[in-house]
Length: 282
Image (cartoon, rainbow, N blue to C red; front, side):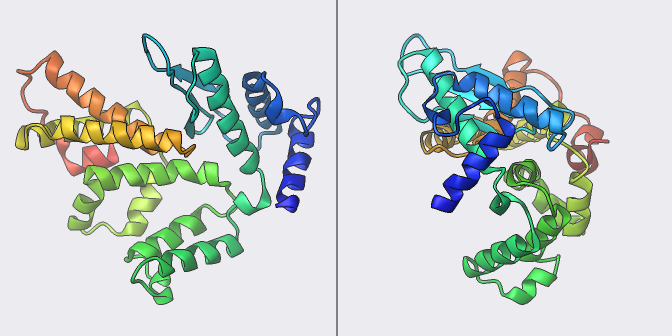
């Protein structure tokens, strides 16, 4: 623990040279510190060179407790985990959670190395019925995870998280299962999606898929949205990274909005909802 704290102080001294490492997390101006941190990262061109904006979102509420989210360059999302009596307090609390995670992300132990991959694969094997031999077979889940890690050698965990979020959503959406039925290999799927970021186009295609699910099973959208909102709240209160749950909420909300804004809309065309369009969207 002492070594970790010392490493954090060293990182703060490097990235925030005008701040006292001992006072960083006690400073009420943590919002500006988070912005300063990522601006410094941009200048160093160490991460997410095309994205340099820290984005805040406050949930509308007539009164406390207030909820605020902050999305970092690259897409990682955090929220306030304390009960906040003002929007400003919620924003500061979310910024503090994000700053702590941003700083920890700079630690050598948070970068994907051969040692990190070996330990992660061993932990994954221990938590499943798989074997270490499966790690060398990309057709298995463990092998695909191993391949994803090796394909992202040298990246930090926050950088790796964006790709992981895409695959979490594809699994939740049913797209990975559909891809397996088309005989696409896991390596092909990973290689393909590694080229893309999670954007409005991908969200729109996933929303279209949920519209089709709703037509087949009325009520499933509302059920999934209630579950996503509950998961998002639980993860926020636990101080966890939130993007997966927040993206689920956004995709389901988009699908519901499209259904209720034009309930008589004809079914999307086959080329829109084909697996190629949904999972390839080129």
